[in-house]
Image (cartoon, rainbow, N blue to C red; front, side, top):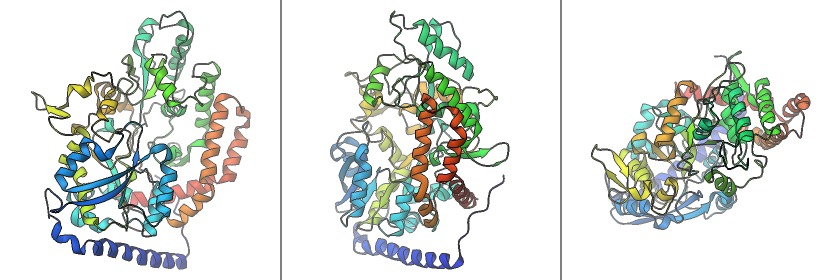
Length: 543
């Protein structure tokens, strides 16, 4: 594989940078150790409880719409407090206001002991790690987090993915079982199986057959209500459709990390910038065809999530992109489609995460007077007992062991008497729905939407087409972050804006060359060079 050599800076700059980072990180580690000097007698070396006398920690936490309303009084955390003797004062922030609140919190001198599920961007983790706000966790992991330390020793690529260019670990991620791609999927393509039967059609296997199915849904009233109100493809935004179709043009062959903008060009074996690739243009031309013929929901760029869910639950959509429509949208008639074959014979499935995801899921701040207790509190969720608690809850209250020795949720969750979906029922007791949480997710403890029978069957169809290699989100040096900050926001906004305009026909494809030239002007070539350097670091660290 060919890679452009990383961009090197002057020796003088590196000497200054290393000196500055060394001073900050020494202070960081000193704070972590000194904060706990007077607390060691209260800490149990192993087992539960973590501390002899109860302590309280304050956590800033992001709240997904699909999780429990108040984590200060929910089964999973009440139970864990009983086990650990550590009380968490949860400061809940809804996801839709998380960025603003997080910024204000970090800008103050009164931030909490830890950030949990706060969707911290990697660049912010590194920025505040360099400043000493987030402490380096390397020594704490090695000395006080045996579950996590074992995982990192067994998976060098995991450690490489979460280590920043200065050699420090400032945050903890969610690890997803590397041997089980089903729990790492973003979403599948789903087709109304009953409508296929009504239309006397086979499951689409190519983009052309998918087009023919959408046309039949629009024109032939497969619901039989006489109103022709079916929507061939519906979604809460067009992203799900674009993402599902990328593999039909051979795009995204290293997974969905890093904004989905880079992969490897199979013809040159070099890094490729997807938004300017000719095959990406062909993909948008195909979706433009679908949109112009009203085979895509016409208000897909403005529809609210609640309206999308209402439409989906009423069975209006002939196809959707979802983790599991039965569990999430509440519709049982969908079946997973195989990845579609495109016009050039490409047929890959890339909607799967690298096992290391959400690198900024958990950080400990320098305000924390109990960093050892905190890392031990978090380490539990990288072991089997913690996984069981996080994803199944408490035996007898949320799950039971069946006659085959399998752990299963109680009927109140799987067949809720109030008509709640699986995710809605689980959220009354547990806090993982909605994502963003740190820990380790193994198949044997995961009963989430992506691991239920319909989703498992969908993954069985998709797995033969799974891309061979999945990159994690990359980390960057200070200088690279500074350069990215000068143009990345404008670049991403322009890509999204023009994608919408090409799809809706507001801008004709005759303007493609101008679009490419504008991206080059904004900084697409510089972006690619930075990605090359970050990729090389990741590869070297994983060896």
